[in-house]
Amino acid sequence: MALILPRSIFYHIPKTGGTWVHNALVAAGIPVTESGQSFSGHDTFRSAKHPGKFTFAFVRHPLTWYPSFWTYRMTRGWRTDDSLDLYMSSDFEMFMKNVLKYSPGHLTLRYEKYVGSVPVTLDFVGRQETLPQDLIRALRMAGEEFDENKILTTPRANVSTALPTYSDQILEAVLEAESGAMMRFGYVRPDGSRRVHGTSVLADSDKRQFFSPQIRRAQVFGTSMLPFIRPEDKLWHEPVQVSSIGHGDVITFSSGRDALVTHRVVKVLRRNGHPVFLTKGDDCLNPDHITLPERVIGRVVRVGRLDLTRPWWRFLGKVAALVSYFQWRFYERFKIGVKDAMAFIGCRVFKNL
Image (tube, rainbow, N blue to C red; front, side, top):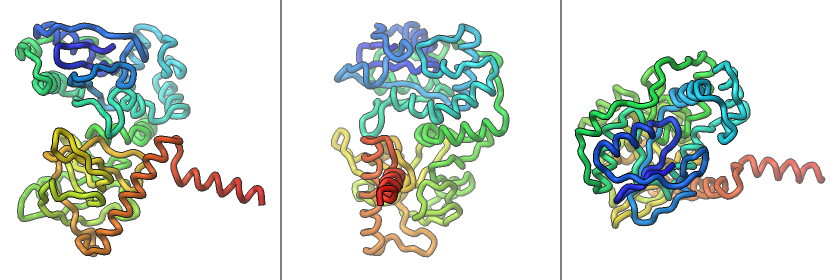
């Protein structure tokens, strides 16, 4: 469902704390109206349109979302109104094997269904792990009038006390399949590292050093910028005015509370008169969430021995951005990667020779 507030609308993604949010809003004295029945009884970004209102939702770490969903179904019963019910099993391990086999990346796609895909997204996406603080932040941004203390003292709802655990093999498979959600919403692995497939990030030690004005070197983890930036490459950054960031630049920005990402700017947009950036890994099919100016840490000026300030490399950067943007739009239109499409066409041509 969607909850209509005086100045905003909350989209309830299943198993992300929506019941608690409803209770907290009522306790805080905000008038709430439920709206619509849609996907699994929940409104989605595309199905509920309320022009002029601030929009927000919450997500949850993929590694805890699946156990929570499975436990809820085992307690309340499996249904037929959710595609995940097709993979029902009384054994969590078997349930996850079915999901990974028949619907890999299911949660990443589900989140996109609710919060939208860049450049058209909700105004704010918080996290279930910090639900009270993020709800207060969203309501302040929306300009709602509410009692903050009531929200902080609202007891949690629908809390599962004993969740099933993953085998090592299934855990790694889930992290791989849900790398899109992990990257987009700034989630980390259980060991606290940012080595998530599909993103280039900075290690903890480098991150602490990076914020020192004297040290601007960092080391890459991840493969999302292949072949331009490889794992373990050294990056040099420069402080930058956001107004000078352009199409083709490679920037490092904060994607969440714990992660820094290095990706290419494929499009510069404007929101409320200020520049915002659509970024994407050169080796990724989908772009990141919109990057706001305050999240930008710096611009990459050197990768190893490559000086990116030289005209030739700046030109190649713009070309790479155009190609990367086209690949995403092609995938959005046809739901197939450009490489896969070319391989398919080549096979068909070769077969008919």
